[in-house]
Image (cartoon, rainbow, N blue to C red; front, side, top):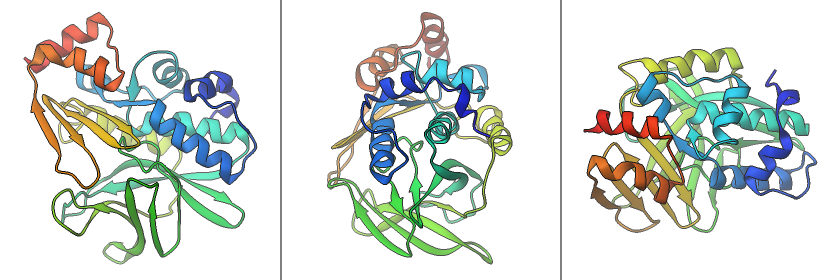
Length: 274
């Protein structure tokens, strides 16, 4: 289903720096999950410049493994799911509604994976950009931290009359918790991803079709570029923000995010931002 047989598994694991066990265990899942988030970049340049994000595995591998570029959640999960399938994990994909304080019902535009191991289910959300660095067990009262970043997972009504799951993160200012996204356990397939991915890359209503976004998570900080606003966030501290000049963006992408644009794309992006 996820074309695991077509994946260059050795190249993917080398990209992650993973030379450990490949058996489908919780320890392997944790290692792959963390390494993917810290190694594979998150950006939406292709959508901003060309209003498309190819999801065939060959294109995803070429961009996320074979070049110093990245992708959004659908590209990340397409690659990750192929690896999980090739390694023999039992899993299914889901799509979530990113809320981040919104009180209206948002479209289900975020891709994730639910992995089933030893009678338990684990949320493996590797494509958010600022993703949890550990898989999160699906229980009704999970509070978890990797030692720096904290999350809560709760079972609750996520749309009128529909129960599901809500992932919470600490509010950026003040005390309390903020719903990051909600989801149900309705399995999603590559065909579903293609439809939602097309909307995200090309629709004027999509936040990622016209606005440059890049993210890079480190164990102790998160860097985010939102068009010309560069933000660095550390747990428990107020975010640090700096406004960039358009000409600074390609160098910041390379130096801060590890994203090196081809000269043609850098020129196109400068014209769009300027």
